[in-house]
Length: 306
Image (tube, rainbow, N blue to C red; front, top):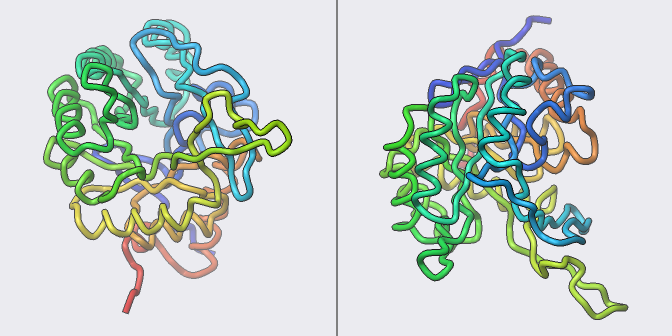
C-alpha cells in the first residue's frame, strides 16, 4: 500500500498529521510522554495557562455521564512563570509543535499573557480560550458576546505575531456570529467546540454531584453538536478550523474533516486511553492507505450533502 501524505498546516504551523491534543486533557505534554510517542502526533496543546497559578475548584470536580464526562476543574494551572521555567525545557526536546492555550479574567490579562508567550521560541502558536467571565464587566463571558470576543482577540492579535487560534464556546445562540467576530479581529484559525454547560445530580443525597454544581460536558455525547457547528462555521468563515468534540476514533476524526476541519483535537479519549491520540493518527493513515486516498487534505470539506 502507498503511504499517504498526512501533513496539514494551520496558520503557518506545520504538522505531520491532523491530530492535536485538546487543552486540559494532556497536561503540558511531558505527563503523557511515557504512554505516547509525542513525535507521532501533529501538535500538543497545553493546559490553559494564566498569569498567576490557579488551584482550581474544590472537589468533586469530575463525574462520568452517559456518553461522556462533566468537569469543573476550574482551569487549575502552574501560571506563566512556572510554565516557562519548569515546562518549556522538556518541550524543547521534542520535534512536535506546541500550542499554548491561554485565558484571563480581564482584557489586560489576555494581552500580557500573549506578549509574554510571544517571546518564548518553543511556543508555535497560541489558542485563546474565550469561555471565561470578564470580571470587570459584570461577569459576562467573553465567548458568548460578539463584541467582547472581538475585543479580546484584537488585543491578543496586537500582542503577538505567533499564529492565533481562538477556541469557540458552543454555549451561544449563533456560533457563526461568534466565528465572524473572531475572524474580523484577526484570528488565524478557529477551534470548536469547547465544552457544553451541564450538571449531574445525586438522587440519594438530593445534591449536585459537582462541588461547582455545573461543569463542562465533553465526550461522545457532544459529537453531533460539534459536527454541526464545525460544518456551519466552515461554510461561513474563510479560516482553517480545528474540530473538537467526542472524537474517540479515526472514523470520528475523519468525519470532522469531511465537514470542514483541517485538524482535530483529542480530549476525553485521553482519559480512557492515554495513547489515544497516537492510535487515532495511525488508524487515520491506515484508512487513507486502504482506500487509495493519497493526501489527507483531500478530505477537508469533502462532504456531499445533496
